[in-house]
Image (cartoon, rainbow, N blue to C red; front, side, top):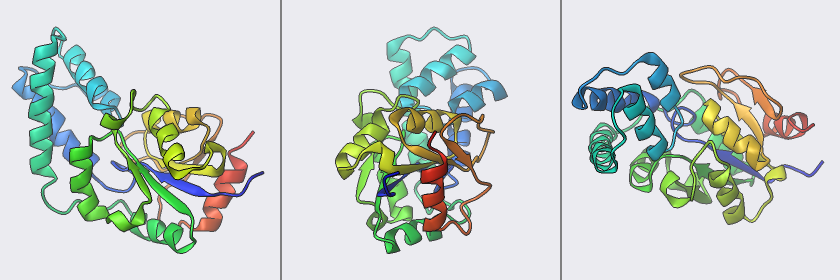
Length: 223
């Protein structure tokens, strides 16, 4: 088994408790569009790329997915979430210490998120750019999560293969993307449960996470 070389971190719901800010934004957008969001639709949005999220919102409200209307809705949501993320964003428990532990161990580290570059830059003001060798955003790849593209882009930028990486995720969408890319996946659920599947190792929180724990994930997540 090759040694662990890199850790790839999801952002919303994994490192930052920012899903609650997205929750405000998407629910307010639904009201702007003339409807109320169901819990089923809200859960389907968690971890989604921007275009997929808009299609899900429009479908959930029974609206015609007119490209111009969806573009306007996307701009409205971006502006609203930018307002919500203007200040410091709360960390998920243990996340900052986990990032520091990986950095101290000399492992490569990358941020891999479905969030757009513009919003990710706001979040990096809280996270700290020095924790990451590379960052990959949802608008920088052909397909966002659940496709493997963001993780494949991340491993390519780091110069490592997916089989020497552990991805840390909180959602079904992100976990599927990382596993499909070939990474071992540590899942720390946040807003919704993540179904068990091969390649996923579960943990209740990042509190107390060590590099030894990540090495164990790297070895035990493989068939």
